[in-house]
Image 1 (cartoon, rainbow, N blue to C red):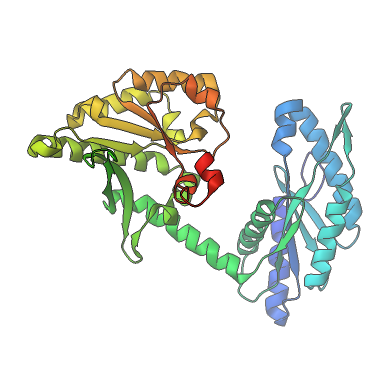
Image 2 (image 1 turned 90 degrees about the horizontal axis):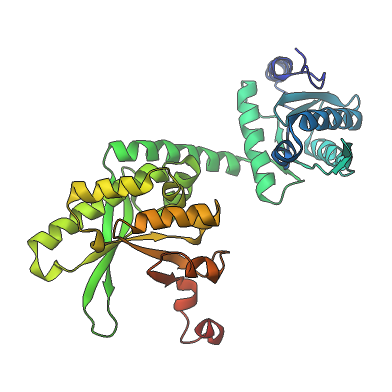
Length: 370
């Protein structure tokens, strides 16, 4: 029932105590309890830079300091990894729960001395207040976790009290992720094509493939409605491979069937995670062979984040893809952090300047200059 490293109560014991507190609350119809969930900020960096032994010593020191700040006001547990939970004793309203959170955060404000290194370690705290809807510790922890991540998003070393709006957002996000996993199986995605026009001649020279989702209950969804969830879950990679195959299939058919379209090319967006996959060039080559599309008719659009994993590694992948005969285009150019030198030494064929600069360049002198 206790954590071997910190000697604090562990998850098993905390869940038992939380379950008992819930039973008492329901028996008395008095939901005057609270639970706090702490997640250390930047702890992984300590493990990665100083080693797991130093990380363990830091966890012991943090546990001791948190316990001292809490005193007899509640039960502190190491819930797992760099996560701690607190169940204040007795009745606890929002004001008291926030006071406990501030005390614990204040206790972490001073640095820790570990193996001759001075380490600063804050925490993000999610607070859940008692409610008759909670029947199990898992439900309370779920919402405390949601509030904790909201605290991290606000800048870390702070606390957030869970509210129903967060619960609704979490439910909606969970439903969206579930629907996303089914969308590929159910063939709910579609590709729309935006014309690419030569401004000098007015001629249609190609198109850009744009993803759309025919959601069974929400109707037509645009990428901003679901791509963030797809990126977080990693589903963006299989979606991008599906989209590449579909766009190449469509264009190959148009080029065969319509003489006026025999010269068209298609631009397809590629997520940087897909682009960093081992064997991505071979995968793209397989798609071109299966669909019968000439490599010269395909342009792959990548954002500046392709350099995030390292410039030399990214350039190696870019050159492998370029050897296939396809074009490479930088998308959203001007909004990332890469230097012009990164593009000058990489095999890109075009830069797509981000629309934030283009849409008002007739009226915004700074954007016109850029």
